[in-house]
Length: 90
Image (cartoon, rainbow, N blue to C red; front, side):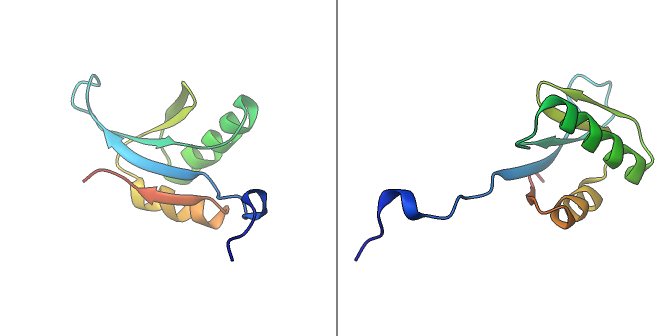
C-alpha cells in the first residue's frame, strides 16, 4: 500500500558548500547555499562560521561566503548543527 500524500516526513533542505574564485581576483571563497534561515539567523550563523575558520566573509543573496578554502571544516560544523550539508564542486 502506498502512504497518503501528506504523511511523509519532511525532507531537510540540502545545504551545499562549494568554492568560487570568479570575480574575486583569483582568491577563493567557500560558499554555503541552501540554508533555510531568515536574514538575522543567517547573519548569526555566518558570524559563528567565520570565527570557526578564522576568516572574513559576508552574507549575500541568501548565501554565506567565507574567505578561503574551508569546505571540509564547514561541512563538519554544519552537520553537527543538524543540517544535511554536502560538499559541492571539485
